[in-house]
Amino acid sequence: MSKERSLFIDKSKMPLAMGIAFVAFTTQFGGGFASGAQIYQYFINYGIWCLVMPLITQGLYALFFWYGMRYAYKHKTYDYRSFSDRIYGKTRPVMSNLYEICYLIMIGTASAAAFATGGSTIQMLFGIPYWLCTLIIGVFIFAIALFGTSVVRKCASTLSVLILIGLVLVLVPNIIVKWDAICTAVGKLAAGKMSVISTESGAFGPALYSAVLYFFFQLASVSVMYQHMEPVTSKKQINKAAIEIFVFNFFAMELSIVGLLAVAYAGSLVDATVPMLVLVQNGVQSGFLTPIISILIILGSISTAVNMISGIVARCVNAVERRKSSEKEKQNGHLVRNAIATLIFTFIAFAIAQFGLLAVVKQGYAYLGYAAFITLFVPFIVHAIVTRGKEI
Image (cartoon, rainbow, N blue to C red; front, side, top):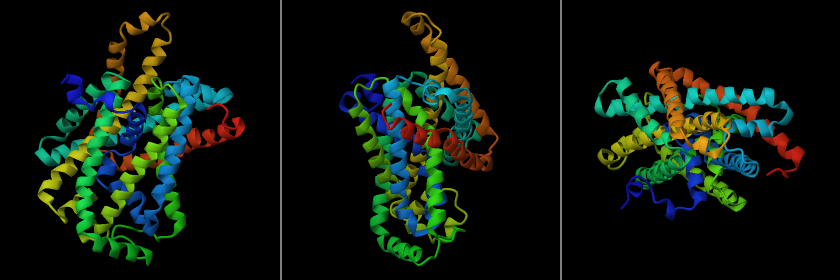
């Protein structure tokens, strides 16, 4: 068996569309999702509507990713700056630079949060210093992102399969064993009795707002997908990838919500930082499943940060190489340029994580959502209406 096949899922056995879908999966479902914290914060805390909101969230996610990927493929814009300059048209002097700010917010929040979450989990497991834990995470992120989009896509495919298998291993046995508790929780939510950590009313309006806000800050990551459009050979591959994005993401989110409802009224949830751990510790085979949850959180953290960092690395390296006069000049020194850019942005995320700005990071997601609304959601809608979809 070759070294490449021993490290990653064999690409020859996985269609490109599925690899692209898995990149989108690992971008959204990082450490915050694997821990269960995002599920409670944006869904379960808003009552019975948590069971249907994933349809809206993941439907919008797949639709807008489909639009962005189709545009990037048709116009050969394989990094977010060239994409922005093209789609914003005459407004690009303002809007492209606004999106640069949006992407930097994403690097400063999502990537730093990934470092902090993964590092904290390693610290919990082994008791070694926090800075060393985040350094270990950084080494993995740097090593994967260094070699470009094909390696990132292969790694995303591998991590996605591992995360999905891990979620099934953790959640399905607990859903079966705790089905009565889940049904009781659904009944309480339907009657208006909220989760023990919720301060919401259970009304539809706030639930919808929270789900859409979640979609907005996840939409910011659409730009990491453009680099993966270069090997695409037909629009059908993108169409298939968008369908698979919806299926994988909806399945993972709905499964997690149903499973976590089992502990929605558990007293230990009040002081917990990792709700999924509460489920495991109060469920079946806790001794076996606790390490799996920890590994899922670490894998999710690494996958999210890799996708974010590789996106801005592609933008910077492409900007430099566009100034080269020949393909040979572009290839000469490409790995060095990629290494320098990867090191810089990995270090930035690592440095932010050292401050432990978890409260700032939490607020950063909201600001990221508002920034994505201005720079992506509204422009995509306007562009689709004005062009009547003819540019994709």
